[in-house]
Length: 172
Length: 377
Image (cartoon, rainbow over all chains, first blue to last red; front, side, top):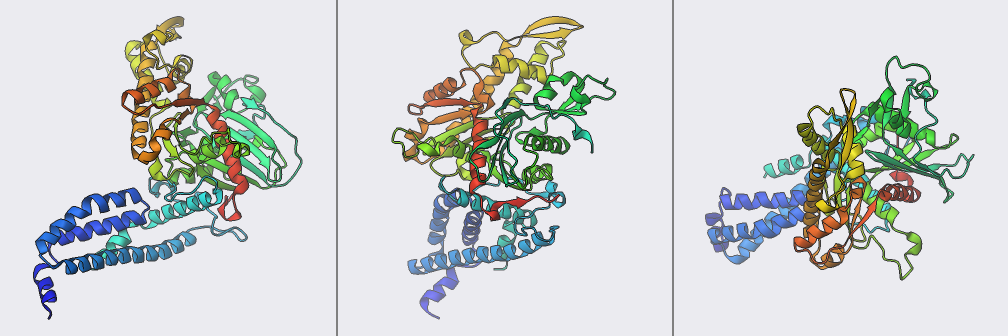
């Protein structure tokens, strides 16, 4: 065991509360970003994370390269968890949405909605709006963005984004 | 359901029906389905000429039980828009929308079918782009979809501020060096009946972070006035409809000397009595001004600091609430007093309804097949 590894094992216990907080807020930033809440994600990254990182870095007393490596790895892991959770969710919810529809032959399956069969009361609140910036001249881009926002709202109704992301993180 | 056998002769506020058509091409519809007033534009896909351009008060009147023959036009069981308002004493008036979203699904369906009667009879495939409040959620869209089932074949729902921006922009003048493009850097304040929406438009469609919406607008003002008036005049038998009527005539946010006394005549024990609602109306309008000011300030605070100077030069107030006398000047004064640099507030009034419908039609023309949602039924 190298000196570096030994130091890491000695001072950065997985149960370290500061490290747990760092993981929690990193995951939160990733989830916020996946939800399209960029401003809030940036706020977490710029306002909350620096203090937590500073606190943990001082407390763990690890060499700077090890600290940087640990943080880099943890950030990558959290991004990966959220991305995987999202991908699974997209597959499952698309299947559920498709099965829940009454689609007569000849209709546009992707865009058809049976209004009468939708569980209106159980749909999540919150505006169905654009998350990304689209120039005014790009009407097609705006409509694509809105369609994706609506699909995302339907996925959210079936399986809230925070569930798979949080579930994946809990498997750590 | 035979409710709709009625009223072909309904509710045309402004109508320029424009060219007869016997084409069976796809008919494109732009609809601003407002809480108080709806605006309907329609044109053939292959033509730039409007076949329908109409504003209709969003209200349905159901005939009272046992009403005598000949009282309502054509002995209709259901009236719409102006006709319903005109015969309010003999019908049960229902507003299908509250806060810009459907509150009464049956009335909304009836109203949507009435809209269909305003379109050419031999329309083939009818596709509608429908404006929704910026804050509307998925449930609101589902309700709207259910309401237009059997009326339109395909729909797209788009937030109203997007459509207003598209409709307000004069595409023909974009190359004109004299033309000041109103959507390059502006802040729009739309005060409707159910909600006040504020959004920043800076050459792109506003994202959810660029807009604020609050369920505080004309209807809330009416309630404030009614509550205060009932305390002052408990025997006057005031109703929201009466309060709304007086407010629309006398609403004002000017200082005392600029305000016309708001005198309403009500019937007490069968006798006409004049009551003064000036103070109550002033209080309701002041509350709306304050709310609008707070939302505007918050959104300006979110804007890119480099863009704020120009943004403050283009604060545009629209919707029914903007018709309150002195509203634009009062908002500008409050912004100035708060320390914002040289704000300039312009009032567009109800023209906004037309912009949303016009923008909806522009959108319909550019929509691809993948964007249209089939409505089953």
